[in-house]
Image (cartoon, rainbow, N blue to C red; front, side, top):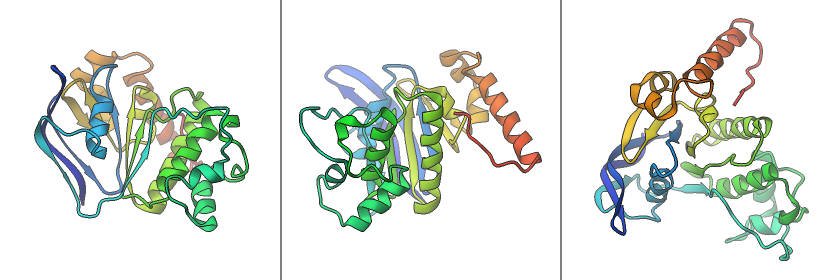
Length: 247
């Protein structure tokens, strides 16, 4: 089932063309990662999907009654403003205690409800943002650079949480990232963006595409990292070991 579709979408900001001829579909239950260099239009695409930015040309179609959850790239909270995690989860609309606790547990942020937002680590902060985003039981969960500033173990744990949320909610997940390790981990589909859609498909297909290699090369953060991940995945599956993401 298609949840969101962009058809021949152009976005011009001021006089600057940012996106040109972008067509894509987001289907229920899939994890899609959008990658591209700085200035490639990734955040603008996300703003269009959310509805915060209107296309200059083309159109966006959303399924009727579509519920969207959003985890922003950065959220500044004044450290002098005391606000607990539990109070933050109540913004902008109050939720029941059971709903708050369920969402915090689902995002891996259980036990943080009494903590001050200003005192959280980067990973804890992202998990609280995630908890707030899934309170509405979204059909589509959109995340803008969700692991920026996290170390690799923190990133890997965050992506594992996302896979669990996808399983439980049945929602689609769309992540914008410049971290190519994301591509090698949870994604069902990768969209490589550089003002337009350069290539898209499974991580294996995209990493082999000339347009991807032109943008990102073939070093250990590109196709070789993908090969190593696939090899490890096959090795784990063959030995019936539980799979641990090495995002």
